[in-house]
Length: 323
Image 1: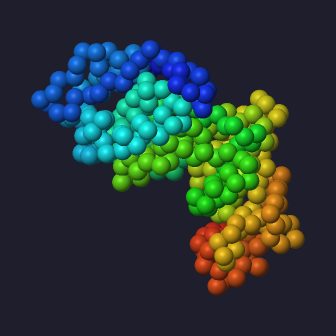
Image 2 (image 1 turned 30 degrees about the vertical axis):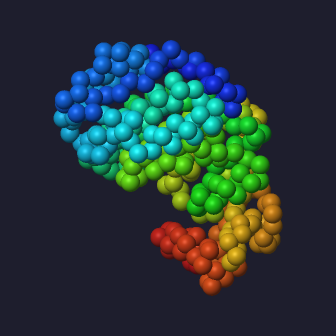
């Protein structure tokens, strides 16, 4: 097991929880012609451990590293979004130290992820085992240690969602905080980072697990589409149940969400009407109400909910259920 010596860093304003670190980001060599400065590797070692330094030096010849990801990790400041990341982090209240270390870990994780993705497909056939292996990226794990406290929420309740990004915006408008609205999640959500989403999705999965682990009260789950193999159902909810076993204040509040023809999101009541708020106490009740509405009330001309209806129909057909 790799030993690490991760330290906290204090942000320059009160927008994020106070943490402190004595480290600065260390850029890896951008090309064989540029040797890393001794101070860079020392800072990297103190931040993410000896194994990270070894991997940084070996990355230029490592198998499974996508070429653009390799270049970005070798020269973090050369990435086109470095300036935007730095500015957004400053506005969110992060110190320069946290910003530089987090950026190095994000790009290092993206460079490492290709190999892990290949291994996951080669070694495992079960979806969750593949997901777990992809999420074992040590750079992303170290990222959580640096920014984990910046995933805390300002609102009383945490929000999870499924069924399109507009559901996240809907949850936020109702006074709940999704991962994308946290101090760090909001910054990363505005970035592209890499055109290969398979290299960055595991980072969001790692952040998500850390996010739900910080639940201290009711967690509101907004469900526009139900997929038992989704990160929400397969990872986030099981993690929440672990938290619930230790903290009785944490409970799950489910919301069946439907998009009307004008795009407005509403919630489905037990009587299959649309309302501003229709919470359920269990997942099964929420899914049943959502499916009943999609089967019995959904207007086929409503393109806003066509995908949710198609997914529901396909899932019922696959399970041998009549529609």
